[in-house]
Image (cartoon, rainbow, N blue to C red):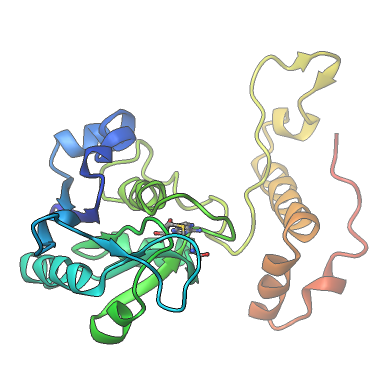
Length: 248
Ligand code: SAH
């Protein structure tokens, strides 16, 4: 099955862009996903092909016109009726690996990319468009966010990643950050790889990795750590207070 990516954008030449090389590029060649950038400007109706106008109420910048956006979304829905439509906006729900997994398991995704100040709000009131965000940062356009979202989906498609298991242990999959990695040389600038990783004792290695996963999540991402604890029915904050320093 081909994962159908449709991107509604003022800059279709940005696609597949970086997704045309490496893992995603190979998957595109193999037909594991398809990339269909659609020029939003083609849905403008006046002779100047206007896509934006000044914000109601005043202020800086321009706003994408709802009639043009709706025509583009309707076109995508007619082409790909089973694909969810996601609009990229800092006002949206932050994307999670869980959401990415759900999208990757489906038929594809249609992504509406903003520019300027963003969208006329009525597009969300009148069309089945879900607002999602890449995080608490402000980009100049939705395209880099769309590329990031697609990259995250594509690597999960069947047969795209090398080792079949390499998705399972990653950051967020268990509600934790992944443990740190090391590779040869064993000693570099006076620092060695933790002894346990070279012990060959798989149970000890697994225990070390789990401990580092939990500790790093607790220190770096208290929000994830809290959720992880709650999901296990115990408060996360006190659970690892006695944790000893990881083996070095
Ligand atoms: N005025 C808007 C920002 C507009 S940035 C605000 O303050 O909320 C222009 C476009 O870039 C947006 O319409 C959106 O499509 C995209 N964009 C910017 N930041 C983003 C983010 N964190 N996630 C997803 N898309 C983003």
